[in-house]
Length: 308
Length: 290
Image (cartoon, rainbow over all chains, first blue to last red; front, side, top):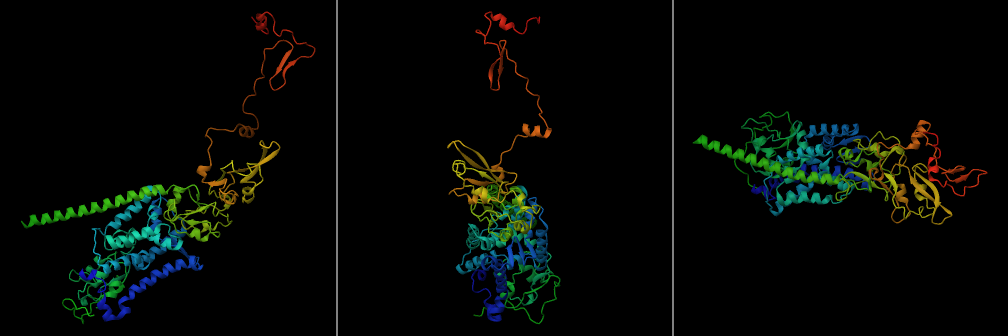
């Protein structure tokens, strides 16, 4: 963990071995995805080009494609409102999409809060902030339950009153009001109170999307896990580090190399920072224990020295 | 020994697990309580904030609207906006303020068409059926028409002129020889679009669009308007009054509807209207009845 919390060394070896692009590829593709999705929404209000209207709760693209957040729609259902066809269609499309690409891919590739909490995490490393509060990773499911309970009890979509995810996205597109304070709160929570407190422990939106990730074919695989040199960079960089171990170290227990934990956000950072190219994107079905192990390369004993 | 230790560890682990769970549940419950109370407060829509046409009743609306802003985007006049955190309207929900930008009552109602969830009811096909609020001539002391002037602006701009707002002429008691043209709002036709409030020439509008719940009273369920019942029945529903009977001296009649005392022709008024013998007066008309 010492390496994990001293930023600058994570991925240094990968940078040396693989070069800048291949050691930052998924990070920048992800940022590009986040920025371009936000950019598409902003194109209307900023440049008067209305390809995409609405926000992440529900949108209409090119006046034809409806997309609706299934989570907010289900809250509406819990509140007692049966939504109209457009929203149902939109929610169905989004659900199917995330069932395919991994539920929490939403968190890594779409959600605007990701950049905020990633920034907080980066600053934690930069300034050596190691504060921690014992937060259960299961808290998010309690939060998820709470949002549905409150909707059912009050008959109103209560969570949307303060949801930082929609607050930030809607704020950027329609105007913030005091919404920035909520976003700042999340940032400070992650920076000062506890590591990855929001996205990794509390956010019910992520919790909901993780439910869709249980069956998604697209997963990260520790395909060449035999090459792992235990540098720990993947654990350090991973927003949900508990998902790695079963896949990376599970060979002895007869586990395949596929990261099956639904909390994996498919962000691909482990692929970037691994100097030994252990990880790659793959399909859930290719999970036999030996398929991808490259026998030719022997795992090195102990840690490799960081070259710099 | 080993088993005992093992059991101890399991116990400790179990206890830790339970404590952790209780801690999380407690924290989340506390958060939920706060959020729930906040939700209750934010469910009260301020009177100035009007919902778009076709919006469900406020309680249902808050469960149906997913705060996507598609109605805002398709409003051609920039009337609608989404509430921001810190405003008194539930965060993210669409509303408009009549005094600032009223609803222009588009015939194709694009905001309703845009709504993906039905929070704006698609059954609203004719914008004249919208009930976003109800105009109330709130300040009768400052309204120029009430003061006897012919401002008439609210009446002129009303999209349902002569239906939602009419001008009712009445005598100007102050001047004694003019009329006042009183703007009267008719809830049967007023959509609550807010054009009247926006265009009121006073620095603070005398006519205001309020939520219907505030603007409108309600008659008692058992109330019946006699004149309407009479019209429906085609005739009076109550028996006519019995003609009045007066105990008057002979040769004298009394019309209580205005003419007063009537002396029959040829009969000079008795110098003493009543007989000197009071018994005679009392007995008049009942002689011979025993």
